[in-house]
Length: 342
Image (tube, rainbow, N blue to C red; front, side, top):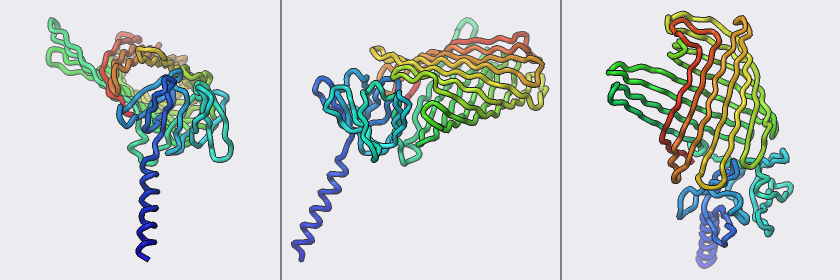
C-alpha cells in the first residue's frame, strides 16, 4: 500500500512541477530562445518578461515564432477579428497559430493588431508610465516642476485609462499651480473597430483664466487605422462642463460636442520611440458659438528597460477669454523622465 502511495505522490509532484515550469517562449530568428512571460503585443513590438533578462521589447522582424499558453489573451487582428485564447508556435517563419478553443487560425505576426494578457490579479492589470521633470533659471529665480502619469487596465471587453499632468511654478518664493489635468476614461469594445465610453475630466489653466473645469461625457468611437505600428481612433459624443474662472464666477452647466482623434505610431528600429498625437475640438451647444481646442504631441524614448525620456508639447485655445485672463491661447513644452510599469 505504501508503495502505491509513494508512486502516486511522485506522479502528483511531477505534475505540479511540470505546471510550475510552464512558460511562454519566443523563438528568435537567430536561433536564440527566450523563456518567460508574454505581457502584450502592440505597435509592432512584443513585450516579453524574460526569466533571465527581465523585460524585453522585441520587434516583429526579429521573431521566428512564439508560444504563449499559460494564460488567456485578448487577440485582435488587422482583419478585424477578436479571439480570446492562446498563441501556438508555427513551423512557418514569422507566423503563429491563434487558438480560441474552437478554431485554430494562422496569422503572420504583423497581422496581430493588439494582444493583451487578461490577468487575474487586479494589481497586475495596471500598466503605464509615471514621470516627472524639473527646470530652474537662476537669474530669474524661477523653478518649474511637472508631474505626469498615464495608466491603463484591460479586461476582455473593457479598458480604462487614468491620466494626469501637473505643472507647478515657484517664482521667487511664490508658488503657483499653473496647469492641471486629470482624466478617467472607460471604453467598452463592441467590436474590433467600434467602442463606446464614459469620460470624467478635471482641468485648470491660469493662463486662460480657468480656475477649474469639471467635465462629464459619453462617446462613441471607431478605430480608423489598424496597422502593426500605426493605430488611430476617432471619438465623438456629448460633454457637460462646469467652469469657474479666476475671478470666482461659476458658469452653470455648459454643453459641448467633442471631436477627438488619437494617433499612436511606433518606430521599429533603434532608438525605441513612440509618438502620440491627440487633438481635441469642442463645439459649444448653449454658448453662442464657443469653440475650444486642446491638443498635445508626445514623444517617448525608452532609453533602457522601464526608463523613458519624454517630450510633450501642448496647446490650448478658447475663443471666449475668461475673466481674469488677457489671452485665449496657451502652449508649452514639457520634458520629463519616467518609469514604465509592465
